[in-house]
Structure formats: C-alpha cells, structure tokens
Length: 397
Image (cartoon, rainbow, N blue to C red; front, side):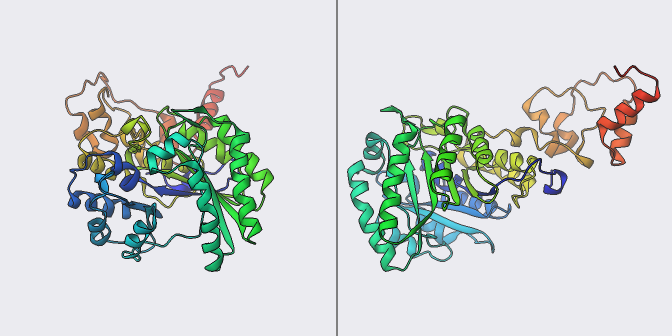
C-alpha cells in the first residue's frame, strides 16, 4: 500500500475530510432486495478501513425509497468502531425522530443548516416540496437554532451548477441564494461558518466549481468549511474536487462525499446508477499521492470494493480497485512479469502470481536492471539513470 509517508506534498493544501456515502447514496439506487445481513457486512467492513465518517442510510419513507425500508435494522445491527462518526439522512421531523432512536451509535447533526434547491423541478421530484416552501422554512430553522443556543450555522444549495430540466445555473444565482441565507442567520446573531453545495445531476465543471469556491471564500471569509457533494455521471467530479482544493486557502477545510466503488444516484434525477459519485478508493489514492493524509488503509478499502460488488451483484466503477496504488518499495512489479492483458490478470497486485497463471512470457533470460537494484537500495531512479549515462560518457546536450 502507498503510505502517507511515501509522498511529500508539493504545496500546502486545505485540510480534507472524506464522507463515505455508499450505504446511503449507493444503496438508495441499488436493488431493494439486497439482504440486511449483506448490508451490515458491508457497513462493518467499511468501518474497519480507517474512514472517519460513514453515512449509514436514510430515515425516509419506504414507499418512495424502498431500499431504505430496513434502515432501522441496519442502525440497530451494525458494529460501531471507536473513532468513526456514523451519520444518516433525515428529511423531516418524523425521520429525525426515528434517527434519534439510534443516537448513539449515530451522531446527532453537528449544527443547523438552511438549504435550497436551485431547480424547482428537481426539488418537487426529490422531496415533494416547492423551492418557495424550502425558503419559507428558513425562519423556523433559524429560530429553532437560536432557541437551542447555536452560535454558528451552515448554508447550502443543491442542484447548484445545473439541472436536467432547466439547464445551467450561473454563479450570480448561486451567490444570491447563499446571500439570502447568510443575511437571515446574521440578522439572528448567528455566524455562518460552513457551506454545503450539492450537484445531484452531475453538472459540475472544474472551472465553475473553483470559481464558486473562490467567490464564497472572498465574500464570506468567516466560512471556513466547504462541503461538496459532486456526482460523476460525466466523469468530472474528481477533477472538480481537485480544482476546489486548489482554490481554497490552506487554513480552510474541504469535505468531500464519495462512495465505495463510485456507486450512487438519485432515482429522481434522470441518470439512475449512472449518476455515480467519486469512488472512495480513487479519492483516497489521489489524496495520498498529493501528500494529504486520510488515515485510510487503501488495501482494506480495495478489498471492501470487491465486497461491495458482491453485495450489489454487479461491477462498480472504481479505477484503483482494478490496478492498485502506484507501486513502491516491495510493491514494485516483478521485472519478469508475463504479459498482462485481462482485468483478471491485472489483479496480480492484490492476488499475486496466481492471477496470471498461464500468461505468455517471452523473456528467454531474466531481466536485470542496475537502476532497479539502486531503487531497492532507496535511491531515486531518475538520478541513478542520469549518473549511469554520464559515467558512460553519453551526450548530455
């Protein structure tokens, strides 16, 4: 496994936290017939990887989301691991009451938040409310937060960059909807220190995400935590997350939602399972290569991705689970590795030589490399190659 000590960051980044959404965002678009025992097995396996926050499901109506009909059994039946924060989604008072029955092991919401969908079509499809009704609910949320003594709060927008029913939304619209929320909180004497931005229909583009993050950071410097829920139907989510990271000052915090194998999607958004999220294993590998600590054991996470495929009954969409982390140290590939052509053979990074039994191997004599020998002694390959070329009198211009 590539460890966090293997990579020195090229710059100082914002702090990054991962929220694992496979049990909620993933399961809500998978088959409702998946046995509870399998879901609990997957949740328990995720808990052992070092992930710090896991969303276990949604307390919603089983009539419209039958995949969550067994959330009570899951919340009561899984094995919590110390140090892991378990959360769930609840969209109304009844859902919050149900969730409270399992708190702990579930964690209560950290602080209050107002939210609005920018697409009035999607919000009707998704929550059976209008955009106006969402906005009308804000004063009650603020009043309740003040009564409970909260000094800080969050703001949020969903379907932020565009909608399959209305098209693209511009930054001025996003900023106006955020400003209205900020004004309401400030009028009540509450500081806004967090923002949540959702993209359920995968309209995110890296330049627009970065621009939005910079605009919020510049207008409201007291907002220090940015939470992005970016879907990946068009393959841009990880790039957009990276651009957001580059746009943030090092003292900020970036929270990124991801899911094991990339599974996820809303049945009301138009893309089904193809909506996807950033695969958690890909995100962990990416952050590790940037030198950003995650605390996650990538080897364990890759194994969990295969368990997830077994549970849902079809291949998922992670990349790192198919090829492994970039090999270093004793993970460097054997120099006499035979032809690797199939997905099954490529699994040698985790399964060993058994994965490529019978593969073609044209090497008539063992392959040797003085550079490899030096690398195994801890030297840098590029410097070794240059030194060897210079020692032979090779041209350097």
